[in-house]
Length: 151
Ligand SMILES: [Zn+2]
Image 1 (cartoon, rainbow, N blue to C red):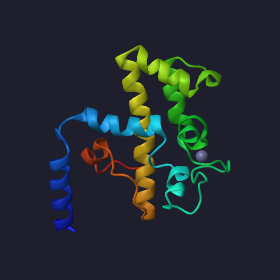
Image 2: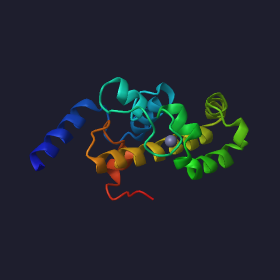
Image 3: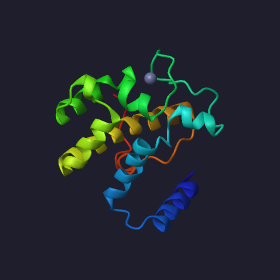
């Protein structure tokens, strides 16, 4: 196990331009938000990694894609309410277009959205890890705080 971790860390050092660069971790999670390619069952189902595309976090029987995760899923209502409050968006106005528009308005908004995306994706990664599934590599935030737990 230790050998595996050493190799993994070495590979990270080899592949990453600057290990202390928080921007790369943010970029990684935001890419999942913007592209829909990442730890979403709808995406993982297409690539043959999970049996069902349905969201494992709610009873809505919806496909677990980026839109469902960030804009619909009841599991993340609390975090989403915080995001809406910080961006001054009403529930009905909280659309991908509106959030992307807000992101471009100020650096503060950009960070707010990045934090929102990162918070959810980190929890999803921990959930999958608990199930023994291998999702994408955890973001740097999670690596820096290995004790981070589901709330
Ligand atoms: Zn859901």
